[in-house]
Image 1 (cartoon, rainbow, N blue to C red):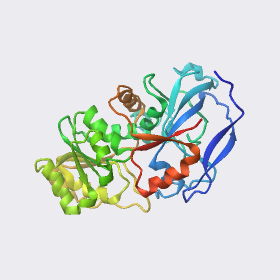
Image 2 (image 1 turned 180 degrees about the horizontal axis):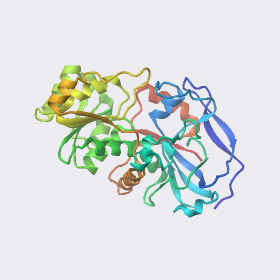
Image 3 (image 1 turned 90 degrees about the vertical axis):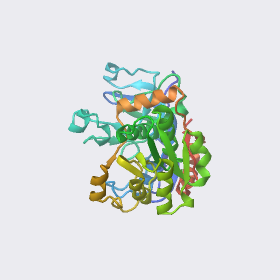
Image 4 (image 1 turned 60 degrees about the vertical axis):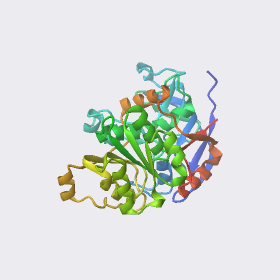
Length: 360
C-alpha cells in the first residue's frame, strides 16, 4: 500500500447559490473510532449535487456553506483503519463505496426498519459532511459499501446513488414481471439505469419518456417503447401511453426527472391499482402533485409513494446486478477540474447518462 500523503486535492463549492467549483488542497484527515480512511479514485456526479451547490432545494434545512466538498457516489480503497474499525468486515486494501447517506445511527425507529434514507440522525455525503469530490475521505467502517471484484470502480460509482435509488423505487412500486412501467426522464442519469433494471433485471415492459435526443439511449437501455415529450401535449401523451398499454395504462410510473409537470402527468398514465413513485426532486418552491384528486385515486385504487435512496442491502444487490452485466451506466469520465462544466451541461438538460470523475 502506497504511503498516505499529508495533503490532497478536493473540489469545493466556492460560491454556493450558483454553479461554481474550485480545486483546493486539504489536509488528509485521520480516521476516528470505528472509521476508515478511503483513497477515492472515482466519484459520480448527480443532479442532487447541483441542487445542494445552488441552494435550489427549498426542502433543505440550511443553505450550503462555502468550502463544502460535494459528491456522494465515491469509490476507492481503504488505506487506514481507525481504532475499533478492525472489528468490522472491512480491512485495508478493500474497495468500498460512499453513498448519499454516509452514515446512520442504526438505532432510531427508521434504522430499525431498514429505512436508512430517513434515519433520524443521518449524515449526508456532500452536505454538511465532506463529500466524494476529493481524493481522501473518512467513513464509518460499518456503513461503507463493499464493491464486487468484477466491477470496475468507474462503473460502480453511479450505482451508489442512481442505481440504488431507482432499484429501491422499482421494488417499492409493486410492479410485477410482465407489467408496464413508465420511466419519466428515461434518458437521464437515473432514468437510463431505471430502464435497465426494470426491463433486464425485473422482466418488466418499459415505456421511456424523455426528449427526442435521448431516444437511442433509452431503447439501448431496454425500453420497449419511447415517447418524445416534445411532440405531445398533456392530453396526447396520456393517450399515447394508453395506446401502448392496450388502453389500461401502466402499473407503475417512476418519476426520475426533477420536474413538477412530470408528476402531474404521471397519475394519468396509471391503470387501476397502479402506483406513482416519487424519485426526482423539483427545485425551487415546493408544489403539490397536480391532479392527485382523492376521488379519482379511490376509484382507481391508485397510490403515491416515494423513496429516499435505498438501504444497505439494496445497495449491495444493485452492485451485484452491475457486476453481472445486467445493468451498465452510460457515462463518460472527466477530471475534477471539469466539474463546473459538467454542472452547466446538466443544467442545460443536454447531459445524456452520467459523468464520473477521475479523482487521481
